[in-house]
Image 1 (cartoon, rainbow, N blue to C red):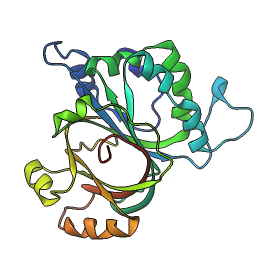
Image 2: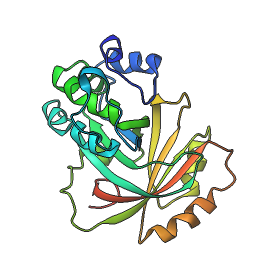
Image 3: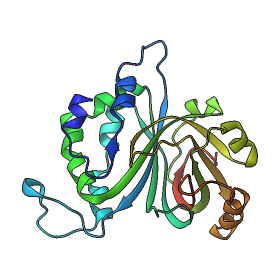
Length: 239
């Protein structure tokens, strides 16, 4: 992670031990990995020094400038889920946007951190983000690995998203049988907390999400997020 550490990461702590595991994963054990990004923006982007913008912009606008799609395309990675959070129902923090990127290999995620073109974009992410969690996951349904990136939809859909700390992953999945399930392999960026499961449930409207949150209301404090996400890109719950 030495190259990655040269980038500014004011928005979270890097799990260096897990980063080393990603970087040194043997080729025969490597393969697709999903980086689930939970994002909270500064109201005004926090540029500093030579990175200062000519005029103040919002944290969201800075993240839009960061948009790493061109770099991802070069390394064979895909954005497979994007949405704005419209409701935070469980958890002590609120979130603004969700993005999930599928990398062809774990090592490619680490190698991207040292690319010059990525570093030039990353200054905008560092300025825009108040805090970020990045959970590295594998899907329960491995057919998702070969599912093509969908075209952006003009029809806005809502998906309930649940992120949990739990030693009982199978029980967490069984509690929400309608969910698309991901098991966390590690958490590469966070406030120090590690996360275990990520689940997605399509709903007709955000009004259904509080009932989903109520179904897992017996969780310990600060171990679960339940959100309503208005998606523009979704390779998991739609075909």
